[in-house]
Image 1 (cartoon, rainbow, N blue to C red):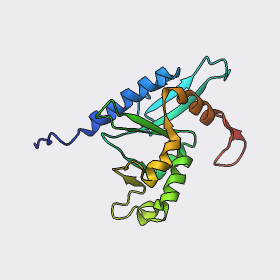
Image 2: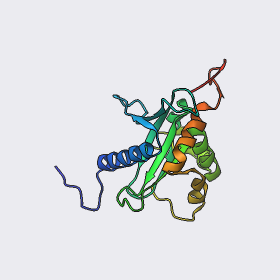
Image 3: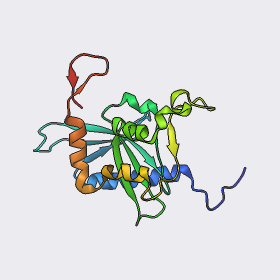
Length: 182
């Protein structure tokens, strides 16, 4: 058995810390939170059940991407969840710096397009590994990617608005047919 160096973070602990931080943010925003029993691509569900403004039960699936520092990426497998929010929680190693960015798949895909990632062999065919998608493990402040993400930075004050917007907009069913609601 090998030991991890002190500098290397345990990825499960990073994910747990990021998810716990995010749950706190969602609760501060006045949303309720549920955790699916099994992981099939959804880590959390943020929902409103008695909001007078909405007048209906709405639920928003969330995929959490937590990092000790910064990271951004997109996996095409999340396309199957058009109303899911992919939430990138950064700087979980230092709670004074922790921030989150919440994007739908389409919003993240637009950033991937602007960065040119969707034209790469890794995106199209999976490159050497065969696993499609694209991830960068460092997002430098004031870089093009950092600037593209700033519109999606989320706080307890903006969470409810984002969830309502994502879950109540009508969207054409991907298989054709009538528009559906979240």
